[in-house]
Amino acid sequence: MSSNLETISSTGNPLVKMLRSLERKKGRNETGLFLAEGARLVEQGLSAGWSLDSLVVSASSAERAFVRDLVDKAARSGARTVQVTDRLAGQIARKDNPQAVIGAFRQTHPALEDLTVPETSLWIALYEVRDPGNLGTILRTADCAGLSGVLLIGQCCDPYSVEAVRASMGSIFDIPFARASFDAFNTWRTGAGLSVLAASVNGTVRHTDADMSGPSVILMGNEQAGLPDAVEAKCDTLCLIPMRGGADSLNLAQATAVMTYEAWRQRDFK
Image (cartoon, rainbow, N blue to C red; front, side, top):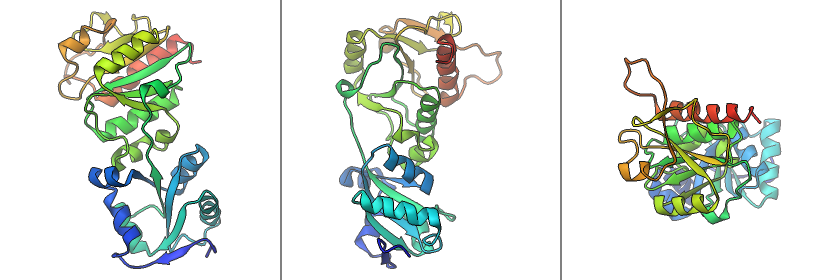
């Protein structure tokens, strides 16, 4: 066992109770922390410069070489490093087959003004998206396509929820994101010279015919309600993704990927 590891075996331990609370938004808000499960995600977070508060490893994994190395790296960063029983690891992750490594990272909350706006900007903005699985998947898509960042508009779900972090597959550590009201977003994007292209059932141009090659934002609406009329009125282009019929809509994460990859194609995948 690594010399940096302390051992905890009680479900009543304050650290275990705190980590278990991070499954709920209340616990995340009170502590300012969130869970990342798996050695790869924890390593990714540390490498990206995120602040690790505490690291938990299961007893059955503690002697693996890569886990020992990760424990030492976490300890050097100032994190508390703990070994727990496999049963406790499962209770923290709320899974029957939990990851052997669980990290609690400190949240960051950048403002729009903190974001760097490159000359060739391409952003995704999500208006009141409620499904954390969709949000995490969209963060992953944005990361894969090398986007400038993801903007969460209005009452979006929590990007730090366990479901969103899992679905992001580590992209939460690599893709910039910020929250804002729609009015604040619209003021910011106007000042930055960004056009807004929204996917909408009211679209007047096929998404493949819309010009997404300049500095722009792809705006996607709520899973059920889409975008309000007042928001669509502020957009520069309303795009329609063709569908043959049958199903009445694409899943939000799928539709966002379709729009994102068309914009990237227009930039010759650079």
